[in-house]
Amino acid sequence: MATYDMSNIEMINTMAGSQHIYNAIRRVPRHIQKSILISTLMLSDLLMIALAGLVAYWIRFSLSLSIFQLDVVPSPNYYQRMAFAFILVTLSIFYASGLYNQRKILGGTREYEIVFRSTSLGLLLVIVASFLFPNVVLARGWILLLWVLSFVFVSLERFAIRRVVYWMRKQGYLVACAVIIGANKEGYALANQLMKWETSGLYIVGFVDQKSAIGEQKYSNLVNLGNSEQLDDIIERFGVEELILVSSALSREEIVALYKEYGLRENLNLRLSSGLFELVTTRVEVGDILNAPLVRVNKVQLTGLDRALKFILDYTLILSAMLFIVPLLLLICILIKLDSPGPIIHRRKVMGKSHKEFYAYKFRTMYTNGDEILDAHPGLKEKLERDHKLKEDPRITRVGKFLRQSSLDEIPQLWNVIKREMSVVGPRMITNSEMEMYKEWGINLLTVNPGITGLWQVSGRSDTTYEERVQLDMEYIRTWTIWSDLYILWLTIPAILKQRGAY
Image (cartoon, rainbow, N blue to C red; front, side, top):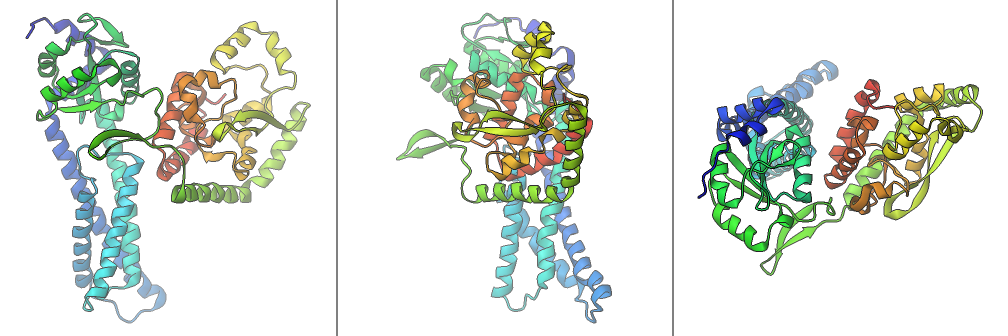
Protein backbone atom coordinates (compact mmCIF):
# COMPACT_ATOMS: atom_id res chain seq x y z
CA MET A 1 0.00 0.00 0.00
CA ALA A 2 1.30 3.45 -0.85
CA THR A 3 2.34 5.68 2.07
CA TYR A 4 1.85 9.44 2.07
CA ASP A 5 1.43 12.42 4.38
CA MET A 6 -2.22 13.20 5.10
CA SER A 7 -1.68 15.85 7.81
CA ASN A 8 -2.49 18.73 5.47
CA ILE A 9 -5.65 17.02 4.22
CA GLU A 10 -6.78 16.37 7.79
CA MET A 11 -6.20 20.02 8.64
CA ILE A 12 -8.17 21.24 5.60
CA ASN A 13 -11.18 19.05 6.25
CA THR A 14 -11.40 19.74 10.01
CA MET A 15 -10.87 23.49 10.09
CA ALA A 16 -13.31 26.25 10.99
CA GLY A 17 -16.84 25.25 12.05
CA SER A 18 -16.36 21.53 11.46
CA GLN A 19 -13.41 21.11 13.86
CA HIS A 20 -15.61 20.50 16.92
CA ILE A 21 -17.66 17.96 14.97
CA TYR A 22 -14.59 16.02 13.90
CA ASN A 23 -13.17 16.05 17.45
CA ALA A 24 -16.47 14.89 18.98
CA ILE A 25 -16.71 11.99 16.52
CA ARG A 26 -13.24 10.83 17.48
CA ARG A 27 -13.79 11.32 21.23
CA VAL A 28 -16.71 8.91 21.74
CA PRO A 29 -17.06 5.69 19.69
CA ARG A 30 -20.21 5.92 17.59
CA HIS A 31 -21.44 2.41 18.45
CA ILE A 32 -21.49 3.41 22.13
CA GLN A 33 -23.41 6.59 21.30
CA LYS A 34 -25.96 4.59 19.31
CA SER A 35 -26.37 2.02 22.07
CA ILE A 36 -27.11 4.81 24.54
CA LEU A 37 -29.60 6.36 22.11
CA ILE A 38 -31.47 3.09 21.51
CA SER A 39 -31.59 2.34 25.24
CA THR A 40 -32.95 5.84 25.84
CA LEU A 41 -35.62 5.34 23.17
CA MET A 42 -36.73 2.00 24.61
CA LEU A 43 -36.92 3.34 28.17
CA SER A 44 -38.74 6.49 27.04
CA ASP A 45 -41.25 4.48 25.00
CA LEU A 46 -41.89 2.24 28.00
CA LEU A 47 -42.47 5.22 30.31
CA MET A 48 -44.77 6.96 27.82
CA ILE A 49 -46.99 3.89 27.32
CA ALA A 50 -47.09 3.36 31.09
CA LEU A 51 -48.09 7.00 31.53
CA ALA A 52 -50.78 6.53 28.87
CA GLY A 53 -52.19 3.61 30.87
CA LEU A 54 -52.31 5.67 34.06
CA VAL A 55 -53.90 8.70 32.39
CA ALA A 56 -56.41 6.46 30.57
CA TYR A 57 -57.41 4.88 33.90
CA TRP A 58 -57.75 8.30 35.55
CA ILE A 59 -59.90 9.69 32.72
CA ARG A 60 -62.06 6.58 32.36
CA PHE A 61 -62.70 5.90 36.04
CA SER A 62 -61.57 8.64 38.46
CA LEU A 63 -62.75 11.52 36.27
CA SER A 64 -65.88 9.64 35.20
CA LEU A 65 -66.65 8.95 38.88
CA SER A 66 -67.05 12.64 39.63
CA ILE A 67 -68.84 13.44 36.38
CA PHE A 68 -71.18 10.47 36.02
CA GLN A 69 -71.44 9.47 39.71
CA LEU A 70 -70.21 5.90 39.13
CA ASP A 71 -70.62 3.65 42.15
CA VAL A 72 -67.97 1.06 41.29
CA VAL A 73 -64.35 1.72 40.38
CA PRO A 74 -62.33 -1.31 39.16
CA SER A 75 -59.16 -2.21 41.02
CA PRO A 76 -56.16 -0.29 39.66
CA ASN A 77 -53.96 -3.37 40.18
CA TYR A 78 -55.89 -5.29 37.52
CA TYR A 79 -55.50 -2.49 34.96
CA GLN A 80 -51.85 -2.08 35.88
CA ARG A 81 -51.27 -5.72 34.91
CA MET A 82 -53.18 -5.21 31.66
CA ALA A 83 -51.18 -2.06 30.92
CA PHE A 84 -47.94 -3.95 31.58
CA ALA A 85 -49.01 -6.64 29.10
CA PHE A 86 -49.85 -3.94 26.54
CA ILE A 87 -46.41 -2.39 27.08
CA LEU A 88 -44.63 -5.69 26.41
CA VAL A 89 -46.70 -6.37 23.30
CA THR A 90 -46.32 -2.84 21.90
CA LEU A 91 -42.57 -2.63 22.55
CA SER A 92 -42.16 -6.00 20.82
CA ILE A 93 -44.06 -4.63 17.82
CA PHE A 94 -41.90 -1.48 17.91
CA TYR A 95 -38.81 -3.68 17.80
CA ALA A 96 -40.15 -5.83 14.96
CA SER A 97 -41.13 -2.69 13.01
CA GLY A 98 -37.60 -1.29 13.12
CA LEU A 99 -38.12 1.51 15.64
CA TYR A 100 -34.95 0.35 17.43
CA ASN A 101 -32.98 -0.50 14.31
CA GLN A 102 -29.81 1.60 14.19
CA ARG A 103 -30.28 2.22 10.48
CA LYS A 104 -33.95 3.19 10.69
CA ILE A 105 -34.31 5.22 13.90
CA LEU A 106 -35.07 8.92 13.74
CA GLY A 107 -36.65 8.56 10.33
CA GLY A 108 -38.60 11.81 10.43
CA THR A 109 -42.33 11.82 9.82
CA ARG A 110 -42.32 8.16 8.71
CA GLU A 111 -41.48 7.29 12.30
CA TYR A 112 -44.93 8.50 13.37
CA GLU A 113 -46.52 6.21 10.78
CA ILE A 114 -44.75 3.21 12.29
CA VAL A 115 -45.73 4.28 15.81
CA PHE A 116 -49.37 4.61 14.70
CA ARG A 117 -49.41 1.21 13.00
CA SER A 118 -47.66 -0.44 15.94
CA THR A 119 -49.96 0.98 18.62
CA SER A 120 -52.97 0.11 16.44
CA LEU A 121 -51.74 -3.48 16.12
CA GLY A 122 -51.24 -3.58 19.88
CA LEU A 123 -54.83 -2.38 20.33
CA LEU A 124 -56.07 -5.08 17.95
CA LEU A 125 -54.21 -7.79 19.88
CA VAL A 126 -55.73 -6.56 23.16
CA ILE A 127 -59.21 -6.72 21.63
CA VAL A 128 -58.56 -10.23 20.27
CA ALA A 129 -57.28 -11.34 23.68
CA SER A 130 -60.44 -10.04 25.37
CA PHE A 131 -62.51 -12.24 23.02
CA LEU A 132 -60.32 -15.34 23.35
CA PHE A 133 -60.02 -15.17 27.13
CA PRO A 134 -63.39 -14.52 28.84
CA ASN A 135 -61.67 -13.77 32.16
CA VAL A 136 -60.00 -10.72 30.57
CA VAL A 137 -62.60 -8.00 31.09
CA LEU A 138 -61.58 -4.48 30.11
CA ALA A 139 -63.56 -1.28 29.78
CA ARG A 140 -63.75 -0.32 26.11
CA GLY A 141 -63.26 3.32 27.01
CA TRP A 142 -59.97 2.51 28.76
CA ILE A 143 -58.74 0.47 25.79
CA LEU A 144 -59.55 3.28 23.36
CA LEU A 145 -57.93 5.93 25.57
CA LEU A 146 -54.84 3.75 26.04
CA TRP A 147 -54.44 3.44 22.27
CA VAL A 148 -54.90 7.16 21.55
CA LEU A 149 -52.73 8.36 24.43
CA SER A 150 -49.98 5.82 23.67
CA PHE A 151 -49.73 7.11 20.12
CA VAL A 152 -49.78 10.76 21.21
CA PHE A 153 -47.32 10.39 24.09
CA VAL A 154 -44.83 8.22 22.18
CA SER A 155 -44.98 10.54 19.15
CA LEU A 156 -44.33 13.60 21.32
CA GLU A 157 -41.53 11.80 23.14
CA ARG A 158 -39.85 10.76 19.90
CA PHE A 159 -40.25 14.26 18.48
CA ALA A 160 -38.50 15.68 21.56
CA ILE A 161 -35.71 13.09 21.40
CA ARG A 162 -35.23 13.79 17.68
CA ARG A 163 -34.82 17.51 18.42
CA VAL A 164 -32.18 16.68 21.04
CA VAL A 165 -30.41 14.28 18.66
CA TYR A 166 -30.40 16.88 15.89
CA TRP A 167 -28.76 19.33 18.29
CA MET A 168 -26.23 16.69 19.34
CA ARG A 169 -25.41 15.95 15.70
CA LYS A 170 -24.59 19.61 15.16
CA GLN A 171 -22.12 19.24 18.03
CA GLY A 172 -20.60 16.15 16.44
CA TYR A 173 -22.26 13.34 18.39
CA LEU A 174 -24.21 10.46 16.82
CA VAL A 175 -22.45 11.25 13.54
CA ALA A 176 -20.58 8.86 11.25
CA CYS A 177 -17.56 9.90 9.18
CA ALA A 178 -18.11 9.17 5.49
CA VAL A 179 -16.15 9.43 2.27
CA ILE A 180 -17.63 9.74 -1.21
CA ILE A 181 -15.92 7.48 -3.74
CA GLY A 182 -16.22 9.22 -7.09
CA ALA A 183 -15.81 12.95 -7.69
CA ASN A 184 -18.18 13.81 -10.53
CA LYS A 185 -21.39 15.83 -10.84
CA GLU A 186 -23.43 13.22 -9.00
CA GLY A 187 -20.83 12.98 -6.24
CA TYR A 188 -20.89 16.76 -5.79
CA ALA A 189 -24.70 16.74 -5.67
CA LEU A 190 -24.63 14.05 -2.97
CA ALA A 191 -22.04 16.01 -0.99
CA ASN A 192 -24.13 19.17 -1.26
CA GLN A 193 -27.24 17.37 -0.04
CA LEU A 194 -25.51 15.74 2.93
CA MET A 195 -23.50 18.80 3.96
CA LYS A 196 -26.55 21.06 3.79
CA TRP A 197 -28.43 19.03 6.40
CA GLU A 198 -26.29 18.96 9.54
CA THR A 199 -28.83 16.60 11.11
CA SER A 200 -28.27 13.84 8.54
CA GLY A 201 -25.91 11.94 10.83
CA LEU A 202 -23.13 11.82 8.22
CA TYR A 203 -19.99 13.95 8.27
CA ILE A 204 -18.31 14.00 4.86
CA VAL A 205 -14.54 14.06 5.33
CA GLY A 206 -13.71 14.14 1.63
CA PHE A 207 -13.63 12.33 -1.71
CA VAL A 208 -11.75 9.30 -2.97
CA ASP A 209 -11.12 9.62 -6.69
CA GLN A 210 -8.79 7.83 -9.08
CA LYS A 211 -8.45 10.74 -11.50
CA SER A 212 -7.57 13.53 -9.04
CA ALA A 213 -4.41 14.45 -7.19
CA ILE A 214 -4.24 14.02 -3.42
CA GLY A 215 -5.26 17.27 -1.73
CA GLU A 216 -6.98 18.65 -4.83
CA GLN A 217 -10.05 20.64 -3.80
CA LYS A 218 -13.19 19.04 -5.25
CA TYR A 219 -16.31 20.58 -3.71
CA SER A 220 -16.72 23.31 -1.09
CA ASN A 221 -13.93 22.65 1.45
CA LEU A 222 -13.73 18.95 0.59
CA VAL A 223 -10.60 17.60 -1.07
CA ASN A 224 -9.54 14.36 -2.69
CA LEU A 225 -8.08 12.17 0.05
CA GLY A 226 -6.52 9.66 -2.31
CA ASN A 227 -7.43 6.76 -4.57
CA SER A 228 -8.91 3.33 -3.89
CA GLU A 229 -5.48 1.80 -3.23
CA GLN A 230 -5.11 4.17 -0.27
CA LEU A 231 -8.65 3.60 1.03
CA ASP A 232 -7.60 1.40 3.97
CA ASP A 233 -5.30 4.14 5.25
CA ILE A 234 -8.06 6.74 4.77
CA ILE A 235 -10.59 4.62 6.70
CA GLU A 236 -8.17 4.16 9.59
CA ARG A 237 -6.95 7.76 9.65
CA PHE A 238 -10.39 9.37 9.63
CA GLY A 239 -12.38 6.69 11.44
CA VAL A 240 -14.62 6.24 8.39
CA GLU A 241 -17.81 4.21 8.95
CA GLU A 242 -19.65 4.96 5.70
CA LEU A 243 -18.44 4.50 2.12
CA ILE A 244 -20.69 6.19 -0.43
CA LEU A 245 -20.10 4.76 -3.90
CA VAL A 246 -21.06 7.05 -6.78
CA SER A 247 -22.11 4.51 -9.39
CA SER A 248 -21.94 6.95 -12.32
CA ALA A 249 -18.26 7.63 -11.53
CA LEU A 250 -17.21 4.00 -11.13
CA SER A 251 -17.06 1.07 -13.49
CA ARG A 252 -18.92 -2.14 -12.73
CA GLU A 253 -15.63 -3.86 -11.99
CA GLU A 254 -14.61 -1.14 -9.53
CA ILE A 255 -17.94 -1.35 -7.67
CA VAL A 256 -17.71 -5.15 -7.40
CA ALA A 257 -14.10 -4.94 -6.21
CA LEU A 258 -14.99 -2.38 -3.54
CA TYR A 259 -17.88 -4.53 -2.35
CA LYS A 260 -15.69 -7.65 -2.10
CA GLU A 261 -13.05 -5.74 -0.17
CA TYR A 262 -15.21 -3.67 2.19
CA GLY A 263 -18.79 -4.94 1.98
CA LEU A 264 -18.55 -7.46 4.82
CA ARG A 265 -16.33 -5.50 7.20
CA GLU A 266 -17.57 -4.91 10.72
CA ASN A 267 -18.59 -1.32 11.55
CA LEU A 268 -18.34 -0.25 7.91
CA ASN A 269 -21.40 0.40 5.74
CA LEU A 270 -21.43 0.64 1.95
CA ARG A 271 -24.00 2.83 0.24
CA LEU A 272 -24.42 2.76 -3.53
CA SER A 273 -26.04 5.70 -5.29
CA SER A 274 -28.63 4.87 -7.93
CA GLY A 275 -26.68 6.59 -10.67
CA LEU A 276 -29.85 8.52 -11.48
CA PHE A 277 -29.51 11.21 -8.82
CA GLU A 278 -30.39 14.03 -11.19
CA LEU A 279 -33.41 12.28 -12.67
CA VAL A 280 -34.88 10.20 -9.89
CA THR A 281 -36.43 12.13 -7.04
CA THR A 282 -38.96 9.43 -6.32
CA ARG A 283 -38.65 6.49 -3.99
CA VAL A 284 -36.19 3.82 -5.10
CA GLU A 285 -36.38 0.22 -3.92
CA VAL A 286 -34.03 -2.67 -4.52
CA GLY A 287 -35.79 -5.94 -5.19
CA ASP A 288 -35.49 -8.96 -7.39
CA ILE A 289 -37.41 -10.80 -10.08
CA LEU A 290 -36.42 -14.45 -10.47
CA ASN A 291 -33.35 -13.69 -8.31
CA ALA A 292 -32.20 -10.89 -10.62
CA PRO A 293 -31.36 -7.76 -8.54
CA LEU A 294 -33.22 -4.76 -9.94
CA VAL A 295 -33.71 -1.16 -8.88
CA ARG A 296 -37.36 -0.23 -8.90
CA VAL A 297 -38.32 3.42 -9.38
CA ASN A 298 -41.66 4.15 -7.72
CA LYS A 299 -43.79 6.85 -9.28
CA VAL A 300 -44.91 9.69 -7.05
CA GLN A 301 -48.61 9.27 -7.63
CA LEU A 302 -51.07 9.55 -4.79
CA THR A 303 -53.47 6.66 -5.01
CA GLY A 304 -55.98 4.99 -2.75
CA LEU A 305 -55.70 5.92 0.90
CA ASP A 306 -52.95 8.52 0.36
CA ARG A 307 -55.06 10.45 -2.13
CA ALA A 308 -58.09 10.26 0.17
CA LEU A 309 -56.09 11.51 3.16
CA LYS A 310 -54.66 14.45 1.23
CA PHE A 311 -58.14 15.28 -0.13
CA ILE A 312 -59.60 15.19 3.40
CA LEU A 313 -56.75 17.34 4.74
CA ASP A 314 -57.19 19.97 2.00
CA TYR A 315 -60.93 20.31 2.37
CA THR A 316 -60.87 20.18 6.17
CA LEU A 317 -58.45 23.11 6.18
CA ILE A 318 -60.49 25.03 3.60
CA LEU A 319 -63.79 24.61 5.46
CA SER A 320 -62.14 25.54 8.75
CA ALA A 321 -60.52 28.62 7.22
CA MET A 322 -63.72 29.85 5.60
CA LEU A 323 -65.33 30.28 9.02
CA PHE A 324 -62.75 32.91 9.94
CA ILE A 325 -61.47 34.59 6.77
CA VAL A 326 -64.64 35.92 5.13
CA PRO A 327 -64.53 39.25 7.05
CA LEU A 328 -60.77 39.40 6.42
CA LEU A 329 -61.30 38.93 2.68
CA LEU A 330 -63.68 41.89 2.57
CA LEU A 331 -61.22 44.08 4.49
CA ILE A 332 -58.32 43.16 2.19
CA CYS A 333 -60.40 43.90 -0.91
CA ILE A 334 -61.25 47.37 0.43
CA LEU A 335 -57.61 48.13 1.35
CA ILE A 336 -56.33 47.10 -2.09
CA LYS A 337 -58.86 49.34 -3.83
CA LEU A 338 -58.04 52.31 -1.58
CA ASP A 339 -54.28 51.86 -1.94
CA SER A 340 -53.92 51.83 -5.74
CA PRO A 341 -56.08 51.60 -8.87
CA GLY A 342 -56.48 48.25 -10.58
CA PRO A 343 -58.09 44.84 -10.09
CA ILE A 344 -58.25 43.19 -6.69
CA ILE A 345 -57.25 39.74 -7.91
CA HIS A 346 -54.14 38.99 -9.95
CA ARG A 347 -53.97 35.76 -11.90
CA ARG A 348 -50.89 34.09 -13.31
CA LYS A 349 -50.64 31.12 -15.66
CA VAL A 350 -48.57 28.38 -14.00
CA MET A 351 -47.71 24.74 -14.58
CA GLY A 352 -49.75 22.12 -12.74
CA LYS A 353 -49.73 18.38 -12.37
CA SER A 354 -49.14 16.43 -15.59
CA HIS A 355 -48.05 19.60 -17.45
CA LYS A 356 -51.56 21.10 -17.27
CA GLU A 357 -51.48 24.89 -17.16
CA PHE A 358 -53.95 26.81 -14.99
CA TYR A 359 -54.46 30.29 -13.59
CA ALA A 360 -53.31 30.71 -9.98
CA TYR A 361 -55.04 33.50 -8.07
CA LYS A 362 -53.54 36.00 -5.64
CA PHE A 363 -54.47 39.36 -4.24
CA ARG A 364 -52.83 42.05 -6.36
CA THR A 365 -49.72 43.33 -4.58
CA MET A 366 -48.12 45.38 -7.40
CA TYR A 367 -48.93 48.56 -9.26
CA THR A 368 -50.56 47.95 -12.64
CA ASN A 369 -47.70 49.78 -14.42
CA GLY A 370 -45.08 47.52 -12.88
CA ASP A 371 -43.19 46.99 -16.15
CA GLU A 372 -42.73 50.73 -16.62
CA ILE A 373 -41.47 51.08 -13.05
CA LEU A 374 -38.99 48.25 -13.58
CA ASP A 375 -37.75 49.75 -16.87
CA ALA A 376 -36.71 52.80 -14.86
CA HIS A 377 -34.44 50.59 -12.75
CA PRO A 378 -32.29 48.57 -15.21
CA GLY A 379 -30.10 47.17 -12.43
CA LEU A 380 -33.10 45.72 -10.62
CA LYS A 381 -34.50 44.38 -13.86
CA GLU A 382 -31.27 42.49 -14.53
CA LYS A 383 -31.28 41.09 -10.99
CA LEU A 384 -34.91 39.96 -11.38
CA GLU A 385 -34.14 38.15 -14.64
CA ARG A 386 -31.20 36.41 -12.97
CA ASP A 387 -32.66 35.51 -9.55
CA HIS A 388 -36.44 35.64 -10.24
CA LYS A 389 -36.86 37.73 -7.04
CA LEU A 390 -36.22 41.23 -5.69
CA LYS A 391 -35.83 42.09 -2.02
CA GLU A 392 -36.66 45.76 -2.54
CA ASP A 393 -39.15 45.70 -5.41
CA PRO A 394 -40.41 49.19 -6.36
CA ARG A 395 -43.43 47.64 -8.11
CA ILE A 396 -44.98 46.47 -4.83
CA THR A 397 -47.68 48.64 -3.25
CA ARG A 398 -47.83 49.55 0.46
CA VAL A 399 -50.70 47.15 1.11
CA GLY A 400 -49.04 44.60 -1.15
CA LYS A 401 -45.88 44.59 0.97
CA PHE A 402 -47.91 43.77 4.07
CA LEU A 403 -49.88 41.08 2.23
CA ARG A 404 -46.69 39.43 1.01
CA GLN A 405 -44.96 39.52 4.39
CA SER A 406 -48.00 37.97 6.07
CA SER A 407 -48.71 35.58 3.13
CA LEU A 408 -52.29 36.87 3.05
CA ASP A 409 -51.91 37.53 -0.68
CA GLU A 410 -52.15 33.76 -1.22
CA ILE A 411 -55.61 33.33 0.32
CA PRO A 412 -57.38 33.34 -3.11
CA GLN A 413 -55.40 30.19 -3.97
CA LEU A 414 -57.85 28.31 -1.76
CA TRP A 415 -60.11 28.51 -4.80
CA ASN A 416 -57.42 26.69 -6.79
CA VAL A 417 -57.38 24.01 -4.09
CA ILE A 418 -61.17 23.65 -4.32
CA LYS A 419 -60.79 23.20 -8.09
CA ARG A 420 -58.19 20.45 -7.42
CA GLU A 421 -55.53 22.42 -9.31
CA MET A 422 -53.46 22.94 -6.16
CA SER A 423 -53.05 21.47 -2.71
CA VAL A 424 -52.60 23.26 0.60
CA VAL A 425 -49.14 21.66 0.94
CA GLY A 426 -46.92 20.93 -2.04
CA PRO A 427 -43.96 22.17 -4.09
CA ARG A 428 -43.97 25.82 -5.12
CA MET A 429 -45.76 26.69 -8.32
CA ILE A 430 -43.71 27.75 -11.34
CA THR A 431 -44.40 29.19 -14.77
CA ASN A 432 -43.57 27.49 -18.04
CA SER A 433 -40.52 29.74 -18.46
CA GLU A 434 -39.19 28.71 -15.03
CA MET A 435 -39.17 25.07 -16.09
CA GLU A 436 -35.80 25.76 -17.69
CA MET A 437 -34.39 26.62 -14.25
CA TYR A 438 -35.39 23.17 -12.99
CA LYS A 439 -33.50 21.51 -15.84
CA GLU A 440 -33.60 17.72 -15.46
CA TRP A 441 -35.65 18.01 -12.26
CA GLY A 442 -38.64 19.58 -14.00
CA ILE A 443 -40.29 16.33 -15.08
CA ASN A 444 -40.53 15.23 -11.43
CA LEU A 445 -41.94 18.55 -10.24
CA LEU A 446 -45.09 18.05 -12.30
CA THR A 447 -45.96 14.67 -10.80
CA VAL A 448 -47.88 16.35 -7.95
CA ASN A 449 -50.05 19.43 -7.47
CA PRO A 450 -48.25 22.63 -6.42
CA GLY A 451 -49.00 23.90 -2.93
CA ILE A 452 -49.82 27.12 -1.12
CA THR A 453 -47.18 26.23 1.47
CA GLY A 454 -44.37 23.71 1.44
CA LEU A 455 -40.76 23.06 2.39
CA TRP A 456 -39.71 26.19 0.51
CA GLN A 457 -42.16 28.28 2.56
CA VAL A 458 -40.84 27.05 5.90
CA SER A 459 -37.14 27.04 4.93
CA GLY A 460 -36.51 30.71 4.27
CA ARG A 461 -38.74 31.41 1.24
CA SER A 462 -37.07 34.09 -0.89
CA ASP A 463 -33.85 33.97 1.19
CA THR A 464 -33.06 30.59 -0.35
CA THR A 465 -31.20 30.33 -3.65
CA TYR A 466 -33.02 28.99 -6.69
CA GLU A 467 -30.94 25.81 -6.54
CA GLU A 468 -31.93 25.32 -2.89
CA ARG A 469 -35.59 25.84 -3.78
CA VAL A 470 -35.34 23.15 -6.44
CA GLN A 471 -33.73 20.74 -3.96
CA LEU A 472 -36.41 21.45 -1.34
CA ASP A 473 -39.16 20.72 -3.85
CA MET A 474 -37.48 17.47 -4.87
CA GLU A 475 -37.05 16.51 -1.20
CA TYR A 476 -40.77 17.03 -0.60
CA ILE A 477 -41.76 14.94 -3.62
CA ARG A 478 -39.36 12.12 -2.79
CA THR A 479 -40.33 11.77 0.89
CA TRP A 480 -44.05 12.67 0.84
CA THR A 481 -46.32 11.31 3.55
CA ILE A 482 -49.47 12.73 5.13
CA TRP A 483 -47.38 13.19 8.26
CA SER A 484 -44.91 15.40 6.40
CA ASP A 485 -47.81 17.57 5.23
CA LEU A 486 -49.00 17.98 8.82
CA TYR A 487 -45.45 18.76 9.94
CA ILE A 488 -45.04 21.44 7.25
CA LEU A 489 -48.38 22.99 8.25
CA TRP A 490 -47.14 23.10 11.83
CA LEU A 491 -43.93 24.88 10.75
CA THR A 492 -45.80 27.29 8.46
CA ILE A 493 -47.25 29.28 11.37
CA PRO A 494 -43.90 30.38 12.90
CA ALA A 495 -42.46 30.87 9.40
CA ILE A 496 -45.21 33.40 8.62
CA LEU A 497 -44.87 35.13 11.99
CA LYS A 498 -41.08 35.49 11.63
CA GLN A 499 -41.54 36.81 8.05
CA ARG A 500 -38.14 35.39 7.11
CA GLY A 501 -37.57 35.68 3.37
CA ALA A 502 -41.02 37.23 2.84
CA TYR A 503 -40.76 39.87 0.12
